[in-house]
Length: 205
Length: 282
Image (cartoon, rainbow over all chains, first blue to last red; front, side, top):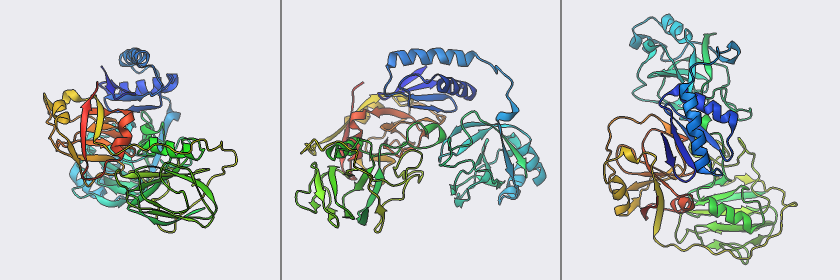
């Protein structure tokens, strides 16, 4: 289903994150005329197109959605496309996460580095990526009282997600460690190391 | 160079914002009442998208280091400054001259354009201050110095006087959806039945409203999805929020309707205590 969002927006219901990622990639490759924003979410892709003829765009989005929903994994992912994030695991919440997860601290590290994660979408702050695919043992609730300031580069978990804080900000996620990798740099093009669909692997530094 | 002597309650540099970066979590930002910034720029012969100053509830006081053509649009403020200074007209401020805005008679946001534009360093292609993410220059404060761009290659000043809209009762025309089906039968009618009052905690992110509660017809949570300016988002309180320029690029509360683009400026000019009505037009 494709829903109207005001005069210039169309919200495509994909029903699944991987379909959102495929549709996002297809739209960025094709760049239909008039499209200024493509915003993937867990079950949708918002397309903002002030300059587009809506009937034609809606029909094209319908076609692309059918193709993306039907497609499986078409090609083996290449190792070079994985963003590797070196982490010093000395975060203030490492022990509380171990306690909540019911495992020793080194197993927290092993489970956090043991799987490839995928950027679901970005939000909360510029460059803040919700990384999906986290080991279920590490699914822990966020802090009851958020910190007023979390340093840039902090590596954290909350609920089913992991994240790297792109800049210093308040935050309620549990801190596992820190990375020197700059995931957000307004002078870089693109400014974010992560975009929806990017594959990420944490490594103990 | 323009030196800020006083900023009033809140003043920022704004242009037309950062486009095409919502998928990286970057709000669009830009002038909340875009039409007024565009008008002010036209009045001084600038391209419409050059950066100007967005003052909130007047109070702005500036000293000009060199002479410059200036124009003001948006919420009409009393203007103290050189001869012929006023709203909706281009006027010359000589080097060393000062300009001060009083409180607006109605409306909230007043735009100052200077020929050549405010030339602070752009961040991600825009000079706008984003109050949500902190991107762009900090809000203006006494002592802030703003460079003026080169005006040598600009066109002539072709308009002498621009008509300003009157106060009038505020009406926001909306298109239903995308998530009107998440609400109880009659919620859209309730949105339009009686005026809402603008709450004190409104800002550039959104206009928070108080009035008829919009009841959900569906349990559960909506997965986070892309948002647009003008979206009428309804949190669990049932009290709607109209998103403005600095809205978060994604959100998890259902949007019952979206304000027409032509009325976004009306929404941006609402001040706390004002009444506003909604009308569904499609």
